[in-house]
Image (cartoon, rainbow, N blue to C red; front, side, top):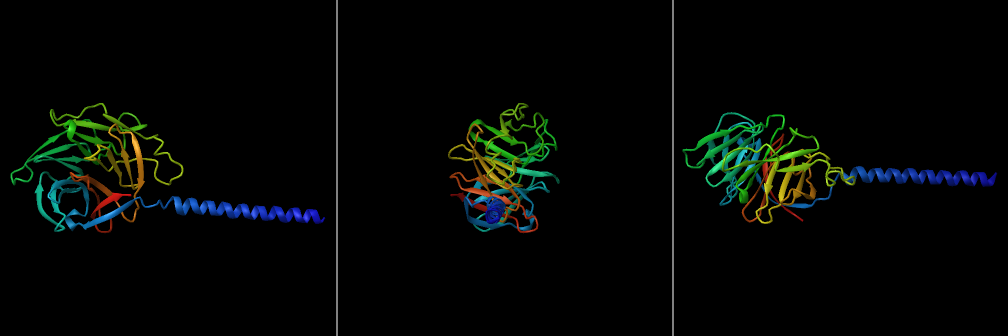
Length: 285
């Protein structure tokens, strides 16, 4: 009888210990893995004025200035990082869902979410001229990212939502700056089954929805921003995923734009979304 009681006590203690350990494990999973360690440092922050509350794309102009667009009006805003003010605005088209911008010399290229590309020549001259280029992409793809591949004289467009050809990847398509045509075959394929996206030890979204794409001027790595997760993926020059960083929601409420200065300073813009739109300069640890 005594042995039976002892056995029951031991089993009870072991069961309780198991429940405690399980509960602790669940606590760790929920509270630590969801709260990814900070892998970056915000070294500068600029609050944006009301006209850029819906900022959707940014690009470096030089002389501590950024060209910015927002996703409602066909306007390019020149934001001065030294004065924290918009010093110039340029109208290039009517209302629309404009998502990214790249500056090539004196020309600005703006991407609309349905794939339409706007070429704004001499955009700072006061006498700019706009030309548009349609292609096979549509609103279903919901494009938000445009990169300038300087070495190959082309723009790169990354699919955000629905790839028109295959659900297992999202294509990155090239737009030649020579013949002004978008190639139908994707130049790169963002593999949606890549092991970096499927990591079980993180609570990051296993989907990738690019909201910005840019090329590092020093090492030619691709930086892929996902504003909904939010996260940032670094890929090599062949678009092979190398690193993945969690971006904390408190810092990146809706990260939509990304650009580099010529010496590698990294800037990310956030839409207001109930708060204040801003531009952050960050460095990764």
